[in-house]
Image (cartoon, rainbow, N blue to C red; front, top):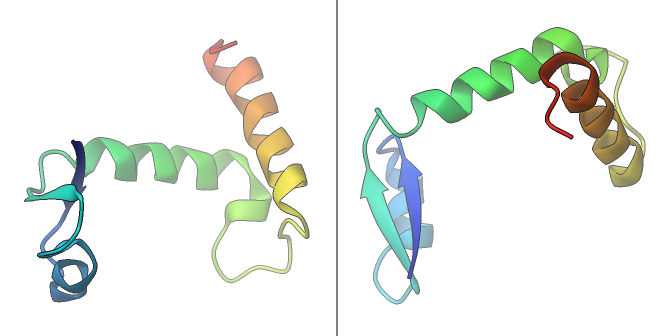
Length: 77
């Protein structure tokens, strides 16, 4: 069984509630790490900044940009 962690927004209960094959866990501690990674991505990649004209026009370019960032900054590959 897969687990989905959210911050408790009521809209998540509609998607991951009864009838879903995912276990829905409402906790802030498990979402902080994800939010910190999102913040780092937005900091380093202009295409992920909010309210900007710099954005990826294709999913492939977004994937390649994130892969390049992971390679250069975090040595993940």
